[in-house]
Length: 487
Image 1 (cartoon, rainbow, N blue to C red):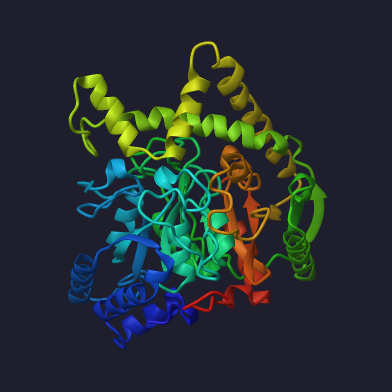
Image 2 (cartoon, rainbow, N blue to C red):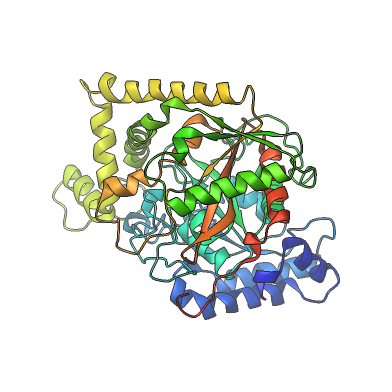
C-alpha cells in the first residue's frame, strides 16, 4: 500500500467497495515496514501475527461503511500500554513488560476496528527531543537518514513520514508530537490538556502529558481525534466537555479570523529559514482573509527553566514505581532490599532519565521546594495569563514549531542544555494546557519545516480549520521523502 498518495477516507472507500480486505491492507502495511524500517528504525515491536489476526476478525465482522477507521492499520507509541503486546517505553527497565490492559486511547481505536501493527521507538520514558535516548535503537529521519527525526515521538512521526503506516499515536509533554511532526513534514496535534484520557499512558509529567495523532494531512488527524477524545472515568483529569466533530469545520476557511505571532517566538536564535517560513505562512493566511498581527507573550523566556523543573519533579514522583519489585527489570545478585532498588534502577534507567529524576528530586527536596518547584509553578501561572490575555483579542497564535530543521544524529545528544533549548517554542503550550498543531509549511536545505497553530483551551476545531485552509492552499503536505537513501 502506497500511503504517500492515500488518505483515511480513500482507503476506507476501497475497503467498503471490497477492492481490498483489511487483512490484505494489513499485510501490505507489514510489507511496507519490512521494506523500509531497516533504514528508519521507527519500530521497537512489530506484531505481524496479532495484526493479521485482528484484521481477519475485522473482515469477518465486515467493514463499517460509516466508520472511516474500520480496518485501518496504525502504529502506537511505545509508552501506551497494549494488552498482551510488549510495551517498553524504550527503557531496559520495561524491556519485557507485557501489559494486561489497553490504554483508553488505544481501546477506543480498537473498538472502531483499527489494527495495531506495532509499537514505535521513542526517547526513553519520553525524555528527549531526538529519539536518540532509546535504550534499543536510534530512529532516522526519512528525509535524510543522517538526521534525527525529533522526539520523543520520533518513531511515530518517522513511521508516518516514511509511508510505513498511514497514522500513528504519539504523546506530547513539551513538544514531543509537534517537534517530530515538524522535522518529518507531517501533521501532529497536541490536544488541550484533558481532551484525551491519559489512562494507560506511562506517565512522565502528569500535568503536561497528552496523547495525540500524527498523520499525513489535517483531515486524517481530525478524524483520529474524533475517535480518541472524551471523558474517561479512569482518568479524573480528563475533561467532561462535549467533544465536537473535529472534521465539521475543516472547510470553513480563515476569513475573519485574527491570528497573532508572538514577538518572543521570533527572537534571536531562530534559524533564518524558519523565520521566513513563519512570515510566508502569515502571508498565506492574510491572502485567505485572516488578520495577522504581532502579539507578546512576555514570560516566554522563563519557559524552559519552569518546564524542566516541573516536568522533572513530576517524573521523579512518577518513576518511583519502577523499583524492581512489582514489574519490570529486577537486578540479580542483590544483598538486601536497598541494593535491589539501587541496582534495578541503575541498570534499568538510561542517563537522561537518571538526570531528570535527580533534577526533580532536588527540586522537591526540603529547603529547595520553595526556591525551585514553587517558583516554577508561579511562572507557569504567569505564562497561562499571557496566553489568556492574547486570546481575548485573537482566535489563534501562529509560531515556529522548532528553532531549526532536523539536526544531525549525535549532534546535540551529548549536550543536554542544547537539547533542552530545542523545546523553547513548544513547551509553553504544554505549560498552559492549550491545543497546538504542527503542520508542514516549508523546507530548509531539503528538510521539512513546520509551523504550529495554537488555540484557545478546547478549541481544536479552529486549529484544525486553519490548518486545513493552509494545507489546501499549499502543497507542502504533499511532498514526500525519497526513500532508499539520503536526499
